[in-house]
Image 1 (tube, rainbow, N blue to C red):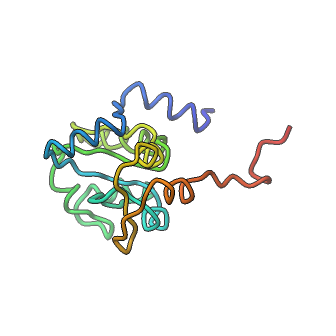
Image 2 (cartoon, rainbow, N blue to C red):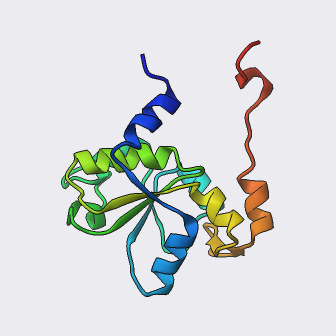
Length: 154
């Protein structure tokens, strides 16, 4: 039986990661990859990279295919487009990128360190109201929220 971190490590044998500064340079150079944020909608609404689209991990596969309620035409229309998959810390995005590759997407990378790393690198972020957020906002909104009862017993 594989555990979560083991699933991520195994997927990393197939998935390429880029760092926040790599993505920043790519965007500054005028490239327009699909910025695919796979966090839940409430997470995305609080804070996200400007220009990203939100497709929660739970509906990703259906979003990439035509004729589903969750279909995202931007994804279903082409498997060759450049896609950067984003999550909070870079783990869900690795799993999502792995699935996309299995579905035939050929130009997919995962943002290592996720929006936490993007915030730490002090790159632009926004919320659902299109208000610009700074790194301090990111620190608060992206802080770990593991409660005591969620910690492994000793």
